[in-house]
Image (cartoon, rainbow, N blue to C red; front, side, top):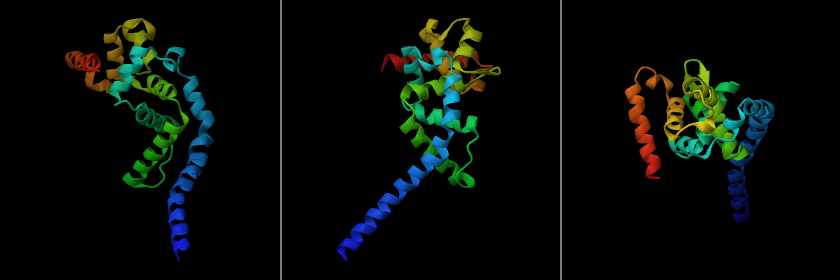
Length: 180
């Protein structure tokens, strides 16, 4: 009897792992070429962000770029939900977040965030915004310029017609960096 209980418990514990492994192979790894194409569309500087910009991005994302990279990838790749409704949406988000965390390096996660974030004005990506707004490459940006990009990536419409709001948010982000 005790062996049967132990075997049943092990089977129940193994079932979610097997289900995740199957989802990983069928839903995530089957899109490897599409994910590689997303990464290849990032500029060289977006694939290897300057350290200050990478730090600001991580700080603004709560030190977990996988969550934002996942959201951007789900939208870009038009990933279907595992089930209908809010629960299906959350399940899809969680499964993809786990796969992104498992398969993409932190640098690759940041590259997705830096290259696929909508920056406002019809522009996507840190490099496009840096060129448009500052006429400079990412590596030549000041901390203030880098903070501006990070904030725009989070919510471009909030700052579009409110430059004073952008200034306050930028000052708050830079204060967090100083206290970090």
